[in-house]
Length: 353
Image (tube, rainbow, N blue to C red; front, side, top):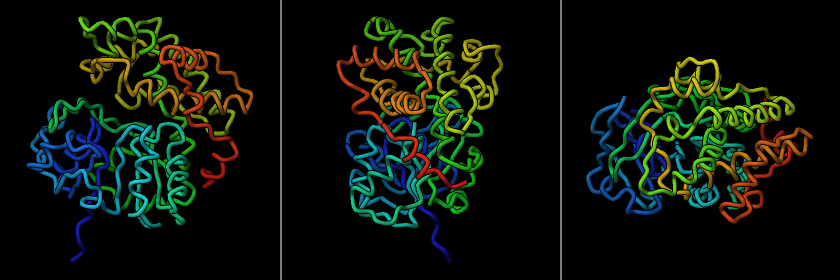
């Protein structure tokens, strides 16, 4: 009898706990790994994740560990922030081969390309089957060491693989309970350029710094933090993303269109769509400026869009303003640390049409 597929969830944060709990509650064999034990200590002790929200239950996984060799399998679901991809690629490099499946949840912008490059640096000669998703399937928040709330499951999330990746195999081996939320795209150019996180996260954080740094104030990120003026600026940024995608030859949908399709909401503009999105109602603002909404989404989202735009002579002034402001506030250079793949390099990895 064929052994049941084991799914290795890489990362014990918001999405990692949601992914592990969801799969386990649907009868899948799941292992969980996190580099620091303190984040998964309770799960390691009793193998239980408590899940509330639109998915409820007590999930029992196979094993959780801070030692990757104890839990890794040949189907890897990476759920860590994309800023950790270099470290994660180094960790898993000794255990992968050309048949290993790696799905980056999500890739952010050209994450699959970065992951492939990092594996090569770590002496992986034959690349595994690397795919990336457009966004995270779950709208979720980790409530404790072994508890997660899933506010919503997103519909029709785009997924695609690098040029060497056989998406038929990736999807055949994916659990049916997870597969139903994805739609396969021809190229990772589409999933990368469809990254809406960078549009929804960066500007609102920087425009709400006073509230975020005020420990006496707790506010809902989308409902309170994105006013009509902020939403208008976001839509203008989004227009620049769409222009870059169009120029590259991979047209994608707007963030407003994405929200309508993913959450089944209505609205004449982005502000109305956000206000009509019940899944956003309970999402709190980041408790500090040390948030992936900036530390991940600026270097691995906005920077590559601006960089490709410059190479293709597509202006991105609104995006540039946000990168400049982030650099000034955080006293760093996100352009230096960010992803800067040329259009030529991108096409070499995504040319699977």
